[in-house]
Amino acid sequence: MSDQIESAAALMVRDYLVLAFLVSLGALQISVSISGIRGLWVLPHRNLTRAFGILLIILGLAYYLLSPLWIEGPWAAGSVVDGTSENRIWGTASVDEISGARNLNDIHGGMAGTAYAVFFVLSAVLTTLFAAVIGTINNRLFPSPSRSEGDAWSEAITQGGGEPTGDGLDALKTTSPLTTFKSSLHNLRDTGANDIHNQMQSAHRWSIPSVIGRMWRN
Amino acid sequence: MLWINGFVGTSPTFDHLARIVASDYLMPLAFSAVIFAIWFVGRDLADRRRYQRGTLLSAIAIGIANLVVDIIDSAYDRQRPFDELGDSLQLIFYRSTDPSFPANPMAVVFAIAMGVWIVDRRIGWVLMAAAAIYSIMRVYVGTFYPTDVIGGAVIGILAALLAWFLFELFKPVPEIVLRILRGIGVA
Image (cartoon, rainbow over all chains, first blue to last red; front, side, top):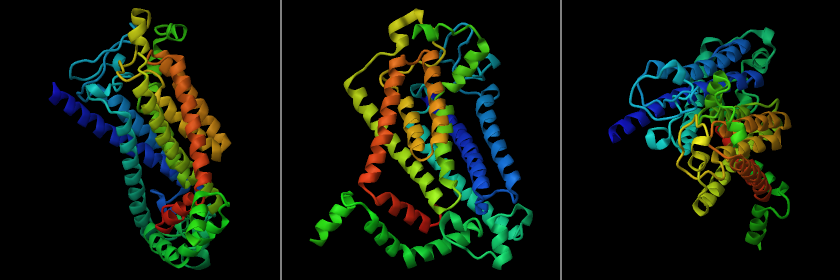
């Protein structure tokens, strides 16, 4: 019984990671296509990137919801017509059970709330790294994107070879993730201490860091 | 409670939909995806920084809300409706074993909705509406009392306000965190 629960947990984690990866990558692609952060686009065109993001989300949900039909697992049973819900033996789910098949308590192999949160954060990090790698490859393969889009990337190339115009995500509008990382780190070394000092100066009198700073100086 | 749950069985299609919407994975994942996505939006640096504050705010609010729910759970063990109401309730969800009040999933989604609302009213209202639908569905499938989800929502909203207050109290720490993250190219 405990072996079965362990297998169930492994299955749930695997499937949730697939779902979370696809959904977070989809959300990222939609978001960066809106804000024009070309360095994280998986595809070289804005509209394609956005459509791809929507497709990834649909694919992720379809896989997660429908896979109990052909993958054997500890799927929850019970009919909505009878108003019942129960745990069942290992097997595939029927079409009538599919909406509730993934509704498993954590003591029966489902995932706890904390696990959902941890695996989503993991997926979000993996997604960003994945998009950064693909973005770097894209930058090499498509160094001169369509100017008809009129975004910062095209403007930067027109003005002088795609040199970074800022740092952080802003720089990703015009350069690849690898170049952005180097220039951002360079900027942080050059101006970071000054920026932090300015932030401390602009903090209101009763903010805790200001109070600690005053006590330290006195 | 029984009035809302009494509609179970009226429309099998709606019941299937309710089991999916009320699940542990769908709404929390959608809300998480929103706070992840807004990290990357914004027309310029100032605009993006505002949204990124929203992501940080929501993340801290989730932590506070979970802590408050855990403290209440350890002091007050309210039974689930399916344990108390028996056969008069039609349960189309799994039998949760943790205390019913306050509803932890509602605390989390309302914490996110309020955290986003503070930085963007339009997206915030959409998330509030989605969180309200999630709450109603949880009552509909028989896993929470209405007062459980109301309690969870209040905790979530207050947690986000507390997180915002902490942001102001510890200013400029959030800005410094964002500056450092910008220095490694991720903010």
